[in-house]
Image (cartoon, rainbow, N blue to C red; front, side, top):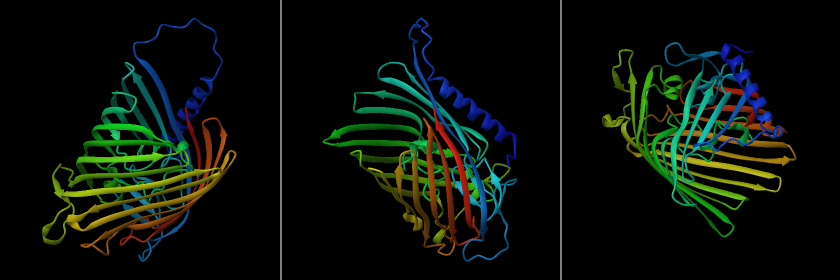
Length: 406
């Protein structure tokens, strides 16, 4: 079941983290207090150990071919499909009729360093099983002008989705993973600055954020591993966006907008770059503007839970759009939560109408909060792939996950 040394190392780290979390609650020994440090430091973290089994599958709807078939990526990487892509960002893939621990398992540690009442720094490193990487998700400084206004600069995750800031903190949402049809873009962070503002209006709490930055990935995991059989360099710049969130502790509504320009190159082994796509009259997917629109509406009323999110990406110069949506509802009884979810991703393109990507997923998930800051989850996903080429295929996945924060 555990294919490599990473699996055993991850389990060992997760165990040590849990022991540390429990030891933090031990009573004070009564020793004399130490002098206050120059920098006030707080360490926190999160993790999950998830085991998944691809139960069955068939080729992409409308496509022929034998089962299983190979979905080729960069040289040396092949996926045995029908398969389930649980994480597009890091190409976390469950292969045909295989059991795996790597695609969703993560461990993250965050340090918050306070230099003064108003000036601080944050860094977060995350180890992921999907691509066997350790990545710095956050690395930024913050300056608080007052209780409502804060300026930040550095590397942050792009706040395009409702769960963007804690997508890998599985403990903070009801499913094993965020719905992969929706949370699936190839550029997910930025280097730049943002300004946050929050206030209260009657029974409502309002928060907003405006940001600007750029991001270039020299070897994009999503594109290189899942869509092209070569190394891909992707750049989004400049990225300019804003969101506003309003909540009254029952309803939470959020709208977001971002605009950027996209550059994409295929990179040969000798470093030579070439454009990867072209359209009518030589219009290339290079220097193409795209706009992102998103809205989410969530509710927690008594024991009932509702989650919904919808976004649209528009690339008008190549008449190409992407829509993604998710609707989820459930019921929480004491420490038990049951959710039903439907999500979908659909591409529309004038210049390649029969070569578009489209898939949807039905999900049944169960959560049990068996201990403080820890939960156990079971989830069944059934995906229908209607893409215009032989992609991941139709598949069913059963997952079990232990998730925690400390």
